[in-house]
Length: 409
Image 1 (cartoon, rainbow, N blue to C red):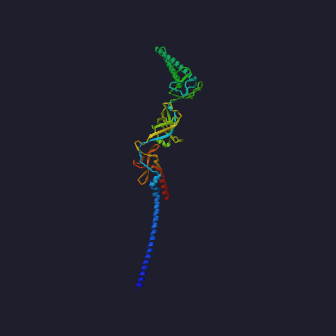
Image 2: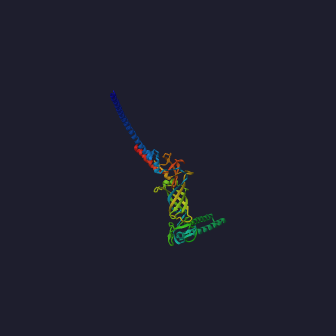
Image 3: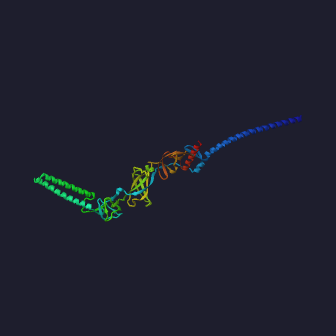
């Protein structure tokens, strides 16, 4: 009995062990299946996580009008934020300019009758006053005109005395009415001839004098800037003997490009600088803006009148004309020019939306600009956090992202 009991106990032990082995094998299969499913899910998860990492952990996430950068990407881009400043700007435009004579202060002096130069009293560069003698001329035609004037005066005197005598005789009943009328007619004719002779001399620029000689004087204060009179030479009314110019004021003329015409107006301040006089400037105001655009240069002529008290300015000098105009009245928001970007043909600035690195491309309306700053008329508030460094990189990243999305679709 004991031997049989031992064998039965051994058999039961083997059965239990076999069941345990089978049970262990079944658990391994379930674990393997679960492990395979876990690996599949984990692989997909890693794949998605990898995609998410490309957007979130690489450069950032891009929307249509905004993008989000990781802290690492922001460091690489060296993004710097700043709130807009408040103030006003002066719009400044630099153009090339030339110094010219003021034609209202220039006199071209010519003889009004064919003449011969007897003597010249001034040289080029001389400063003269109005009434100063410039040249002595002799003219046969002038001599004849003056002789005619003397004859006309004499004829008028004779006609006048005869008229007075006929009136007296008529009063006494000695002379006829016809004789009186004839004397009055003769007087009227003589008077008309005298006026004609005077008018002829006035055409010559004279109202009296004797003989064929005449003196020409300067009509204005100024400087002799041209002399063409030479002793012994002949001159006609088409010849210019002298040019006298008042150089105390001069014109500065320049051409404003078509794209900047809107910022130029009569009365705006202007400053002239010349390479010939470093550090020296002349100031004035725009007193003329052209009405017609020059087609060849696509520019508009402007003019500034400046004082030249010390005579340093010379007609023909070339220089730089700086035009300045106060921008928007009152204070407005100012941002650095480097913050302004062009996106989809619009002027934008990048504004930080939150602390997570999200930046929005904010359209703005601009006003006057200086060398470093520009006025923002609309689109920003005083507390906006504007990207003032790294804006171009943000623009590039946004364009790249938009192109990528467009390709995917």
